[in-house]
Amino acid sequence: MNPRETFNENVPDEIQEEIVRTLYRAYPDAKADLVERDYPWDYIGDCFGQLLRAKVDIYLRQLKQRFPKQIKASTNLNSVRNSHHALLISNRVRMTASAVQHEAETPREAIFRAGLAASAQGQFEFDEATKTFVVANPGPESPQLYGILLHGPTENDRYMPGFIKVAFLDRRMNRICADIDLMKKYSDVVNEMLASDTEKIPDKLTIVPNKETLPKQETLL
Image 1 (cartoon, rainbow, N blue to C red):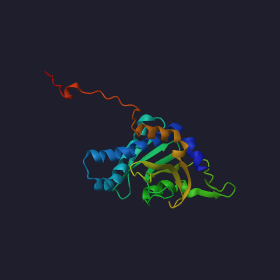
Image 2 (image 1 turned 90 degrees about the horizontal axis):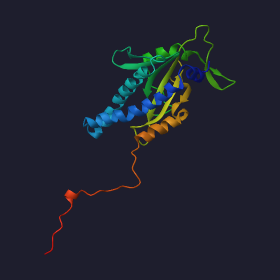
Image 3 (image 1 turned 180 degrees about the vertical axis):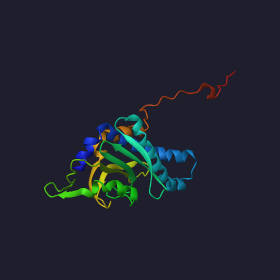
Image 4 (image 1 turned 90 degrees about the vertical axis):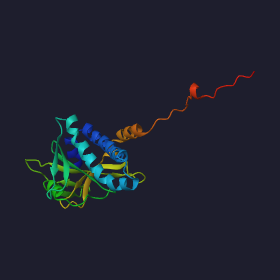
């Protein structure tokens, strides 16, 4: 079982596209919330990561409203009971989201992620013929596949996503065995979101003077 093929078979394109849109909404929305609350700029950077995590999870959870027959969503408490995370289920695929600084980076260790990965990711085997990792024969009862939605900022703007991908890690959660680059796969959606955030300035500006503000002309006698 190839993890990429399994993911694409169980998560429709329309949902994958909406995941990309969700990330492009969450980043600027998190920044806007902090700016609107008059946070000093030096503190906005400190608070942004936590608010972004909440925005991403909330927005992902709302996908259930748009795709009620295809997505199950829940908010789960971690084992230490000090943090929540959103869990999405689409057919045989389970997903959570994690922010990292670089594409090749894996998320920090977490008991809940290790538990989600154990059922499938622990069965990854390296296929010498294709030089890729595949899931071993799952048997009559196919296990669910766990994918982590990894995202991070651009190099020049931490308030915009620079990469969005679904990664499949091994049981120890320290090696990416396969991934799907959603920004590359849905580049048209990326362009759509970038265009919507760009302010359109007309080529020509028509300036109409306000007659009330014009200086009064003196009458020469």
